[in-house]
Image (cartoon, rainbow, N blue to C red; front, top):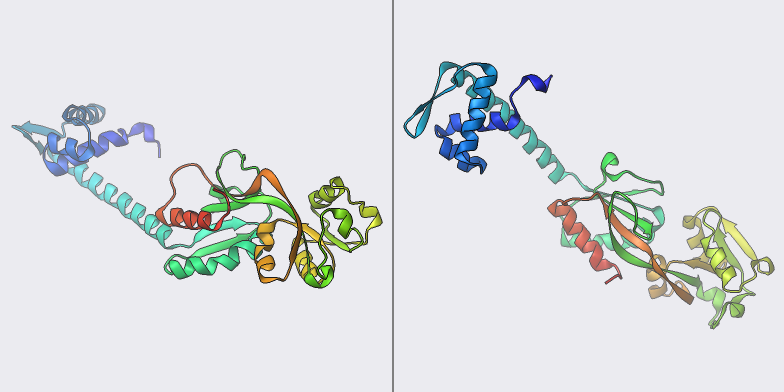
Length: 292
């Protein structure tokens, strides 16, 4: 379709409203424009089509035969548009809120809390997609994302959710009540790290721990690391947000913590307004977080 051959959509809307209302003034009120704007749009269509569509009679208008033909076609067309928009809006309102986040955060922070949201809002479905990859939220159909970093990503709005820290944790069976004022106090214990991300081991090295002199094991993912730490296989470095429930339940003991300024988990979404359901879920998320 070549839209250059058609009158503007604004002009067609103005003519359809005037034809339906039988009055320029009433059409102007409906479309929140001036009486003059409606008249100008109608004249523009008549000039482009080189035919008369309306005849002014007192304060109202009467359609010519050609005007009635066009008005009927526009009424049907705008009706189909409205039906299509309502159908899409209804489908969007009923589909689950789509969330993307990392597997680690989903498993250890989000999922243990999500039952509380469903209890409070049983009619709102939520779909969680665990993924570590870079995601285009609009393209991939996600309402919200939760990602780790400084929150300065281009093209998205970011709200801090959970602050970041480095926390050394170990199982009670490994620590056996041992206290640590510095890393030298636990240097003789075994350590375990994941192979992909090196930040944790760089931090303990900067804190004075010589890993070359320590008993150290590696696993491929964080999903493998946490069960091993819980089982007493070694100490490791994690975010306290990820193991908060473990610490509260006594499955793990926090040995030492250092807060990381600016970094943390952030809620992200495309710029612009959110639906009421997505705003509800975002508000609930922020109530679970630890950032003021």
